[in-house]
Structures are given as C-alpha cells and as structure tokens.
Amino acid sequence: MSAAVDFSLEACRERIARWQPRVNAFVRIEDRPLGGGTGPLAGLPLAHKDMFYRSGMVSNCGSKIRRGWVASETSTALERLDAAGALQIGTLNMSEFAYGPTGHNEHWGDCCNPWNPEYITGGSSSGSGAAVAARLVVGALGSDTGGSVRLPAAACGVTGLKTTWGRVSRAGAMPLSHSLDTVGPLAGSAEACARILQVIAGFDPRDPITSREPVEDYASRLNDLSGLKIATSTDWIARHADPEVASAVLAAAKTLGAAETEPPDFDTLSAHCITIMSSEASAQHAPWMRERPRDYSSAVRVRLEAGYAVPAAAYLEALRLRGTWLERFCSRTLAEADLYLLPAMIVRIPTREQTGPRGGADMPRLLAGVTHLTRWVNYLGVPALVLPCGFDSRGLPIGLQLVARPFAEAALLRAGHAFQRETDWHLRVPPEAG
Amino acid sequence: MNSWNPEAVEAILFAQGIRLAPGRAAKIAAALNASAGLADPMLADLEFEADPTSYGLAMRRCVAK
Image (tube, rainbow over all chains, first blue to last red; front, side, top):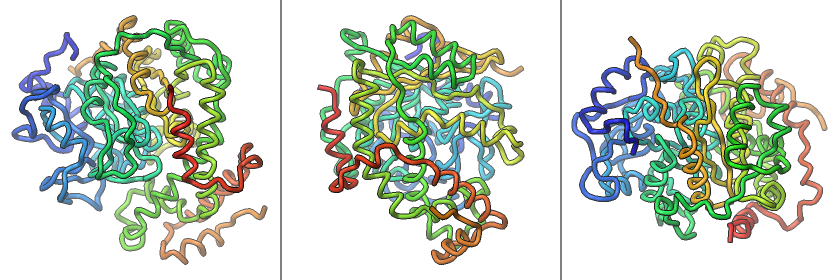
C-alpha cells in the first residue's frame, strides 16, 4: 500500500529483527503466519494488539493477570481479516488492559516511539502505532475507548481510525468500557485504513451493539471529495495548543479549506467520558481487584480504585445526557460542515520519563494534554481519523484529527486521502538506529 | 454539596470489598472533589423522560443523509 516500502513477509521479518530490540512493539512473533489465502487483503502482513482473541492462542492483554491466558474463541475482526486473506505475523504490545494513554507497561516492558525511543508511543494500542510507523507491518488493529487508536497514531506518525460505536464488532476483543469501546485500524495511510475497515465493518450477531447501518464502499470512493465541507476553531487551537502543534494543524486546516465553527465543550464531554469509563472498567475488573489487586501496576490500580467511588447516579446521568450532547455537536459544531478538524493532542509528545512512574510535578498537566481532545469523541460515539500533519522541532510527529457524524467513516477517509495526496508527512519513515 | 474526604472514600470501597493501596484515599477524594465542581450546562434542559437508550435514537437522527 506504500509504493516505497517492500512489505513482503521476508522484508517485514528483517525489519522486525532490527527494530524489536529498540521499540518492543511485539509480544509474540509467529514462526509461521496465521491466516492467508485469497481475498482483498491477500498476503498482507498485519499484526494486532494483544487483546484480540484467537481460539487456542494466548492473549495476555498487556497484563500480569492474563499472562498465558488461552482464548477459546476467535474475535470477529480477526475472522474477517482471515477470510480476506490477510496474514497475522504476531501480536503487539499494549497498555495493561488497554487502560493507559502512554504506552508504558511494567509487565511487558514499555513500547517505545520509533522516532525516538525516549518518547511515548501513546496508548493503549502502543505496539500497533510503533509497528506501523517502523513499517514492520502494513497495518494493525487497535481498540479505542478514550483515544487508544488515535493517540498512538498521532505520536508515531501513522494514520488511525476510531470507528463509530457499533460500526465494528467487539466480539472476542477484551472489554474495557462497553459503552465506549470501539475497534479500528492503524496503517500507513487513509487508503490502507479504508481497505482494512472495508473488511471488518458491519453487523455481527455476536456483538449486539453493532449496527445494521449499510457499510459504504470506503476504498473506491476515496477520490470523491465533492461537497465535503470541513470546519475548525482557529482561535481555540491557537489559545490552547502548543505553538508548534497549533502551527502544523492550522496549516493543515488551510490545505483542506476549513471554515470556522464553534468548538464543542471539551471539558464537560471529557468528564462524562471519564465517569462512564471508570465506572464500567472498575465493574469489569471487580473480581480481580478484590482478589489480586497487587497484580495490577500502580497506575492501572489507582484508575480502577477511583471507579468504585463514582456514584451510580452520576454514571447514569452521563449516559442520559449522551444523546443530547451528540445532537448538539451535529447541529452546532457541524451545522455547516461534514467534518470537524482539531489537533489529536494539545501538547507535544512527552517523554516516557515525564509520564511514567518517576514522572515529576508536571505529569498531570502533560497527561491531561495528551488525552484532552480524544475522550470527548468516545463519549459522543462518533468516528474520528488521526493522521500526521507535520513534525515538531525535536523531529517528532504532530497529529491532525478529523471528527464526523455517526457512520461517516467514508467522509473521514476521503478527506484524509485528499490531505495525503497533497502532503507527504505520512510517507516519512523513522530513521533506523546505527 | 458536601465534599469527599479520604475516610469516606475508604469506607465506600471497603463496602465493595476493595482494599485501597496506601495513601490512595486522599488522592481519590481530591480527584472526586475536582470533578464534582464541573456542572453540565445541559442538565437543566434534560427531559425527565430521557434515559440511556435515548442515545440510540439520537444516533439515528444524526446520521448524515
């Protein structure tokens, strides 16, 4: 899918051998790839976050608690990729139980950013972002509950699609927060994401929240930009984002001809997302939190502990308000546009040390800056695409985010493809060490 | 509204069978107090009949035509 890169199995294996010691993207590398055969993705090497179950195979979920756990079912997303002929060449590192935005992992080792290993990959689909950025695979599945596809895409300089809640089946994927969880692809371009989404999207009787909304032909209409309108909030970005981030994102807005619109209430929407996520994740983990709390990392344990103090009334209030806020976003922010443009993060990518167990006093501000512009999208349940739009003065990627109405993934991919025809940020590859 | 304190956090988790790591109650109480100060501006207009399933109907209304 990228003409400049050799994605033969042999070439990918050679790159994995060189990059794995530096970035720790893989948890397992298959001796012989799984899947394969004929179909629209025939022979394409993929690897997936270590939380998509495959019958008879181990899914560790980035944790100590599930280390060595063998799945008894195969996720619908993997079944569909297998049927399309894709190869699975391994499983990828992730944040513990997908509950962290940076890519730190004390059980399996931190996943490191291929552009500079001192910096975070973003999480929780950390291995997916790093593996795609280093061209170890063509694409990878991730999950996104509060930004977990988009943050690694932004930090690693690749393209990542957070799908509409209900567009892609979560059956056979590790749950975190059932009202927010989504599955989506990370790849080298919007075009590659479109090809993967085409295969995995659609109703699944194994996941009752999947929609019967028709699946569009994502790949064949990529060049059709007719009538697509984009809006942004220039003043908000200029006031709140790091200057280098703002400069790159506003230049992208100019390239895409974005008009002006009012920003959503990010603070309120993010707060509701946290209320729902922490309540549901803590309920999901209650048996292990009662029986073996010391087997969680400190960072994940404190997030889970906080969820038990959220009042049920606050949780239900956040869910009752969700439809009202969705309609407000579509009728106000998207009143005159199809897509809303903003940064993926308001800060430049922090280091692993700044945001890890030995992080200093600035850590809360940095973590808030990493997640401030992703969680609100999960609360609304709408789709969003992140793609690279520049590099900062340290040589690290800057991510652009586009957000759409429910089930408008095709519009996102068309805009992303148009941007990637005009720019070459997505074609840049991190330099190999030594 | 009354504010959270570490003892209240410990008690509410203890009742659910959750043992807090040392020193955590104060941090969680502070976080809860910070989020309790955020008032949703839409709450006053929320219809009495609205329930979590209203979201599904809103999603259908918001799909691009």
